[in-house]
Length: 146
Image (cartoon, rainbow, N blue to C red):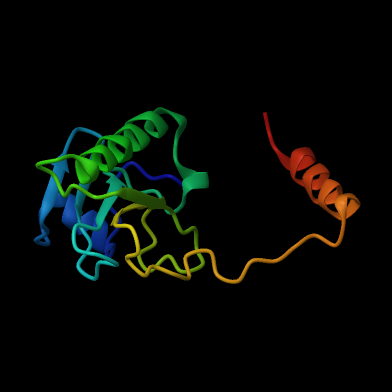
């Protein structure tokens, strides 16, 4: 589903094109990053490929390194003295479920010890036993391509 052009009506394509204002922190040939307008914490950055791609699974291999290298660099900036001096960074991607804009974006959220953030990984569950866990692992491994 990857497309080499902007998609009409896509907010992030409009930001990348400069048609919608954003607080841009990184503007490179393949990647743009800007502040989330509804941040989890102030300094929450969204990193997007310039090329419209709906989800991580649609991302062309040639864009994997530029996107994740940018996420790494932004994470370092959030933690850096002179940056935000954050104690850590949450990096995450939603694919379809909870993806408010259907243009791949990586969240880089500055974290502080005892910042109160809860709920990113919602209630945890357990496998009934090792056999059930092994069954899940086998199904996933069998479905991995290449």
